[in-house]
Length: 136
Image (cartoon, rainbow, N blue to C red; front, side):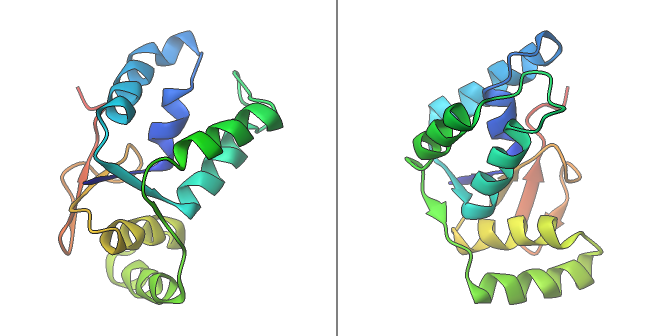
């Protein structure tokens, strides 16, 4: 199982011509299965996909339907234990709380890999290896 960060979902639905390559890769990841995500990832997806300044902004209805569709994958709930572990990871690794929460949700999901464009490629956070699938 691999855990996907929000940017994978956003690229998968992108209609921006400048993101065509990343969109194709993101769709291949989702189509390939064997992935997990978290409630936080779904929340961030909705907020970013409907952002007024987004070039290919989705409507509330479109984004809501996609959130529902993405829930076909295993979704890690946010728990108090994840929050506490994220607070410790934030301090230990010097990350934002939100990045630390993604890492700890990946760990709670049993994933050893985190697919993300936002974190450093090949960085390992106590057994969670970050892979940037868009890296050339």
